[in-house]
Amino acid sequence: MKTTLYPSAHIAELFFPLANDENAILQVIRQVAATDYYQGFETGIIKQPDIARAIRSIAEQQHLRVTQWLTFELLRDNLNLSSLDSALREKSIRRACELVHLAAACGTTKLSLVSGSDPGEARREEAKKGFGEALIRIGEEIKQYPTMLMQVEPLDRFAHKCQLIGPTDETVAWMTQLRKDCPKLYLAWDSAHVALNEEDLAQSLRLAAPLISQLHLANAILDPKAEGYGDYHMKFGEPGFLTPRTAAEIVRTALSLPLPQELGPISIAVEMRTTEQDDLWDNERQCRAFLQTAMQEA
Image (cartoon, rainbow, N blue to C red):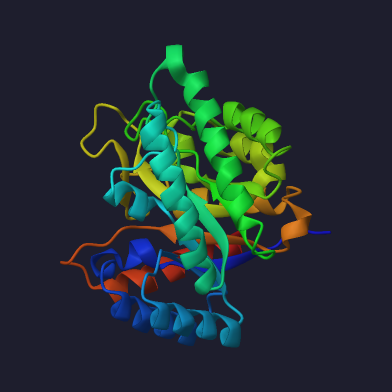
């Protein structure tokens, strides 16, 4: 079965200034659906039940796949699923399990999260064990919703975000073992973090292929001495590494790999964060055009 990708709108980043206005996010989703291009979208967690029902209705009527990120909620409350503090980790797990049900109300099919910060080599395995236990607990909650999976996004280990779960080879080995107890666990692949980990993009994709449930085309400045070095969700193109050619190569490589066949088409989105000074819909149009070009030229 041939790998296929579908375009997704990363609303949580493209419309970042609206993140705390759920009514505004609902209107954005309506307009995104009306573009007749995207087949999915990504948001943070929605708390208002009536808005969640409306989002689910739009997604079902327009055949759009919903991805939601726990990250924003957990960070807001200073929670950490990989904390070495067992009390904080337990509090974080309980909150994440509550958020599973809010995501389900929106019809979410991919529940997404990241690890906490890397404690350093001496305690890294201890933190990974705790994070793995957290994911198993969250995975048990997710089992109530047969169409939902959980995906973890590895971040950069040393450049900027300095997260526990980072380099692809290490992540794949850890996640493969963990899936014995958490079978609906997958990997959200992000080009910026892979590049900031100083990995080869194509090699990372090949290593992670059996686990990949999502792709993010994200840009970054890779020179440690340059201003803006790190993961700032910057616009595509120079001075970052994510040029149209690089994006097309990522797509071409992904299409050549046996991504998880049980998932069907895999989502791909441009990750670019906007500010209050930006024309949000103009930025969306630019990202849409960039994604279209990458997929057409792959």
